[in-house]
Image 1 (cartoon, helix red, strand yellow):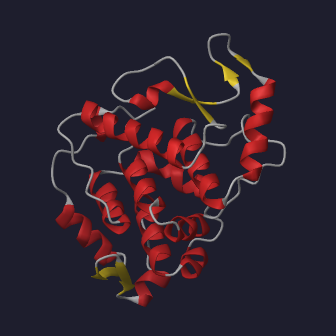
Image 2: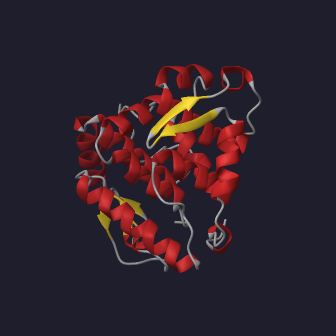
Length: 234
């Protein structure tokens, strides 16, 4: 999907709030969400593109309920859906995460935010053993200077020592660090990872548990939300 297609210049807040209402949730107080219709939240049909919004909203209220409503839905599954959302869904997700809607006048502006947040996460959560700076291989965002460690893109070959260090560092990380690594890695390289985090690295984290971990950290949920709702291609 091209960056132009993912640039939203219209305020979708009203439609996003309507979507959240249809999913059976509402914000009772700033940052405090509640179920409005337990029958809808428990058994109602949820379109596949709305599932990320529903999962994040439900996990914000009750992670155990969200895990039961979306069994076997992993963090990697959740991240993999992010490039498929539309402006209304991104805005609804932003509202639940307590951040401004991702409205920008151009793809370039959106990319600048996405890249800045990606690097901010790497620095704040000390993920330098998993991501490295490289020469720019794209435009419209500083994320095009970031790559996962362990592969020499100039020579198109693995770097065994760097892969070993990356995996070792990941295994020693806190839960919130792992959530951030997996989010960045699977936005960079969607789908199953058969290269980077192998060798016993614990990567199967449920989406509901990941949201619980993010909410438990003072700033993690808002930073994660800014990252995924401003996805600008990679």
